[in-house]
Image (cartoon, rainbow, N blue to C red):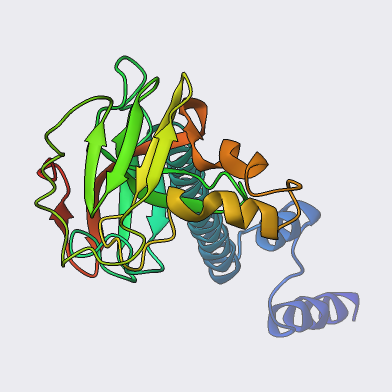
Length: 250
């Protein structure tokens, strides 16, 4: 009977299914890597790297644009403060050489190593109000006596007048009875379009009208432009048309 019970237990063990795994076998089974999870983690890492590289690239591009803009500002500041003077012509006083609304550049370095010359067209601080810039032609040089007689200009004791082929029309207004004693280191400025130009002929009166002096006679010191108030020599117009201003001598 004991032999029969042993046989039944053996049959029960055989028919009862797979034997239980040993702890070592369980550890081996559960310790196998999840292939799908690993692939996702790898893909996530690669995407994060790509996102980081993209952000770095954008930052570098932004910094490069900032560098370009800063360099442009510095260059522009240097050019406009040291090399060039930008000016807009508001009136017709310099026609036909320069028209109202023209924009032009002047050379700030033109007189660093040489003196201004007669007939140069220059940009300068208006003597009566130095907040304004004017553009006129140099007519009288330091130490000269300049006379205006019957629409002609005479220098010192000359009997022949200056040849002024640049005048746009016959000079009929304020064309007689003027004499200017140009101080040292100063210049006398007149516009080409003499019939409309507000130039040295009127500045003494304007100084008086603005309360800068007690009489027109005292205002004669405002008729001249000192050399250090000359900002530059006119070079060319750049708007609305490009035009060199180098050929504007007598």
